[in-house]
Image 1 (tube, rainbow, N blue to C red):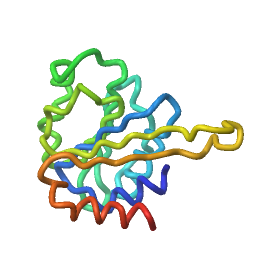
Image 2: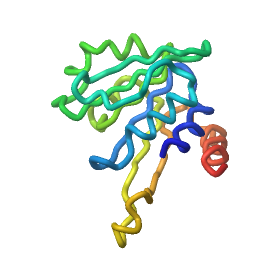
Image 3: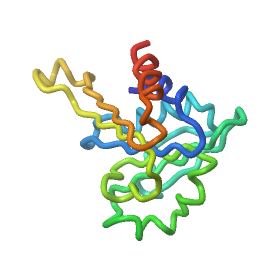
Image 4: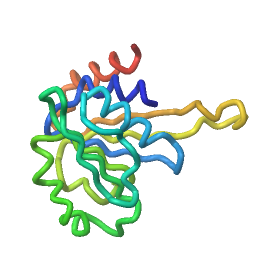
Amino acid sequence: MQELGRRLARLLRPGDLVLLTGELGAGKTTLTRGLGEGLGVRGAVTSPTFVIARVHPSLTGGPALVHVDAYRLGGGLDEMEDLDLDASLPESVVVVEWGDDKVEELSDDRLHVVIARAVGHEEVLDDVREVSVRGIGARWADGSGLDALAGALSG
């Protein structure tokens, strides 16, 4: 998942919103750690569960990474307003774990990444994940962004 995050980071730019969906332990934070490495941000990327959001400034002049865990937040954008994500979004890459039905109003353009553990012999497949990525909005509409994404993800 971390390597996938590093590859995905090549395609992200300031203003991008990424929603991560998956069960506990699916690899959302691990993917975000890879994004942080790929973006060249400062600080270890860890789960922001108890602080809700962490900002990792860039060490390379690129966008900061804003990492949000919306798991404990109840409903909708109203509870997210205190985080000022709408102010951070234009200059940052904002990644929201558990953001479904909570932050979509922040941007018409976003990537929705769903991570699932592979079904089968769990003791053998514990590290195997199935990942789907869907681009939503004009940023991804012409297909070129998703084509580049497919290329980056395949190697």
